[in-house]
Length: 393
Length: 72
Image (cartoon, rainbow over all chains, first blue to last red; front, side, top):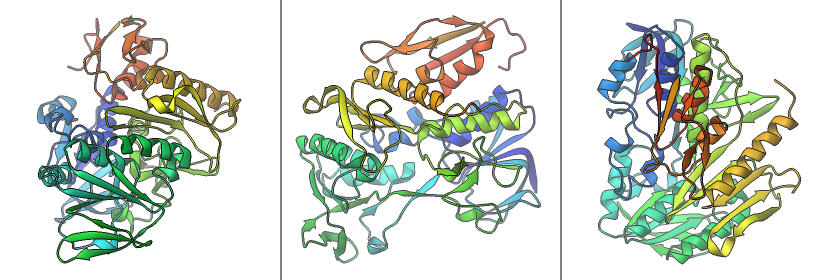
């Protein structure tokens, strides 16, 4: 069995930032990073944006190569999906049966797209998690097919934007009454829908998918209201789930994801959780912020804790961005269901605006299209309010 | 001392650097990064590194100077 002082499970942003953070904090022990894919670690957000559009290459989005891993003193083990964890013996087992021991384990295996049973086994159905998935999608879009996108969350809308930009005919179907409704409420969803419609994307909202016609390949998506959407390619973006399957028999506490405290420690003090795989239980709340920036922050925090340089978490803020038809969408904070939304600068018609959620004296969240600087000011104010409004740590 | 370099050609205005270190980074009218200070003391190292690591476009470089003990 191979052993290391720190074993990092995963190869995305949380995993790589953990390795870097350990060395920054002066950690001198052995560090091993185990990735499921054979590819060198890469950054995932561009997969549904510039990478899909062919504007950035694999090299452009790489997080670590052989040389930088060597300099960092990280042993890269790639192409090894993990199967189980034994926290008592402090070892993990991969799909080939090989075992890796550790003193501290950082779980950073991310999240997986939720699959639709209705579409299982069909050849022209795509999900997006990996570079291989993005490559397959890019190949499919090259023939300018009719693309049906199931799910109008951020991934679905980003892929809609890329597919349309590449010349495909695109139809988005969504069971809720508006895109992004679950995340940002119906009002903001309709604004974003308008932006897509300006670019020729068609929407069917409010009627869930009932059946997929065709044989080996889906030929048409039929909705609950009887609408029939003919398609050549189907893309599914109906959410993700933390990749905790391999932890099932470990005895570690699992909830939405691997349960961790604000500093990233799980129910086992030798095991930490970073990024989309983990949820944080803080002050009786379960926080699951499956986004890039929190993963980077959590990794640096966990690394510091492991290196004996513990520090308080900066913020539990959810911040994320999206790029659609050349415009940056950003959000920070939280949206209470049914919270009022008001535009605080710019104008919705211009697709350049900042909008705040909640009480105007104490907003809980901020959304923007473009207007990066105004958004940043509102985001900083929100963070200052959070600090002022919560008890000192 | 720590020297900070930014690449405005790749910067895309996310603002995570400003959130990490408001006294050092800002966004200008175009929504691109500007430095309020390009050389800062070692006590700022953690915040500057955080800014660099939280940058989605890798547009911030941290150069540690006069520190022979730093890893390569």
